[in-house]
Image 1 (tube, one colour):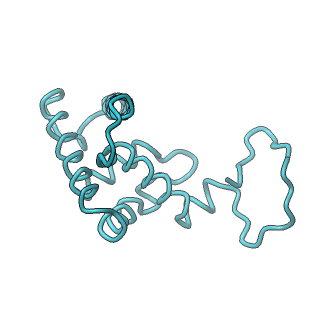
Image 2: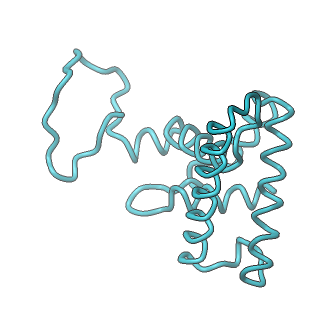
Length: 149
């Protein structure tokens, strides 16, 4: 499961000129957050989501997620996002309360928070200031300049 989580996170934040999710150790972060900070109901939903991803990949591509091409991985991500949006709309329309969080939403939220709070994500993907200066609400960014947020 941890290898699958690492591959999924890397698809969300791939290595480019900045480190990817694997470089930042996002899979370990997700494991800790799920174990220590997530309700049992959402833990089950997340593990079920991982199982569904692998089953879907085996059915549609004849192999596990980790062996898919980048284009196929992106296709799987788009499918997961569409399913999550459809389910959220359905829950809202039918006034469903207390439903477990969608797997994709948890994965995406945990990937982003894990990445941007990691040392590599904060210092190499963002414009890091260890001790920020005064507050300036509106700053003009130069083309290609990194953001602080």
